[in-house]
Length: 473
Image (cartoon, rainbow, N blue to C red):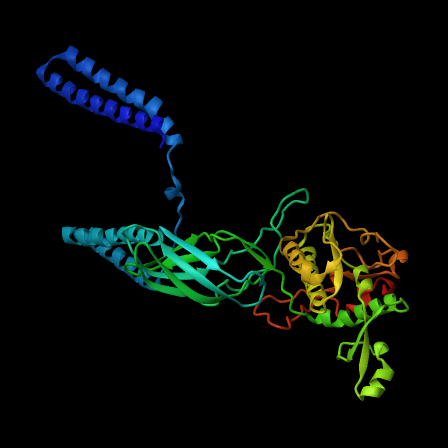
């Protein structure tokens, strides 16, 4: 407790009370014709009031908690409200024309009901807290089960007729407006729909109680979701106005980029696999085991002798020491921050996430690099979520990419580079050890209702094979 502030407050109340008493006495003295006593008491009352205004009011104002004044509620007029306001105008015009006092009373009562509706709505929506329990890992455009806890923290007042919706601005970032801006939220595609698939309705929430609902959420885009992610609205008590309040989420949500394979992924992956096999062909491997052939196995690993003995196709499985020589590199440089460049960057980030997830599914060993961020060369099961977490919040750099990042490290490292550099800019020396994917060869996946196969935009390059490999440019 701030004892100094309390002493200042109590002394100010005492001074104001004394000043009020002196003002009353000045009126009495004036009625009695005692001019000297009247001037003295009135002057002392003014001096006490001025002293409080100069010394106590600013001191207490700096220590006052005004958080409740920052609560902003948006109002939306309903169809019933439009009819109600029209009726109020008609009665007001009739009262002005006739001069009937009863009509004035009716109009005043109707206007008072609108005012009371706002006050009661503020009481219903205030004092509510929202908590969301989600799985540990959440991906964009993929439904995830969640449990929502809505708590009424008010001591006495219950809340009525509350609707919970996903905010239209949840998780979004603003585009950077200037090239020299150092910090900005990551540009993200336009959102289609809210986080909640359907609104949740709570008819009654008692004071000091919590209501839980099992729901399915869907985050339309990657990013860090925090604060003001949901809207609480109510039409209580009369339904003339729908009051909406943005409520803060008590948990910071990291949403990874979507990893659903796109058409570009299915077109580029066979070429990428072929380049990797060509890079690794002829290198010595230690035999690990002989097993049944899977549809994803290469025919060059078939063990014909073991297949002839068993009557089934067998393949040789080697130790994966050379998988440590695989690098995935993301180049953040896009040049001018125009809409097309930002959209291509988002497509590149999602494609990078798809590649990382693919190598995770095949249990590969890989190292990821992006500027100063890098992971150790390890099995993808150990670093996959570090990579996806970085990609969830990665931002473009507005430096102009004249060419893809130069190859670094040992000569036996095969690099997969995603870059916004122009086609034909990759050095000839990197052709034999790099596979370069240019952002402008990727078509941005549509976010509206995307499931397993997002539809491509029509204005992108229809042949990513012509620009996916640097030597083919």
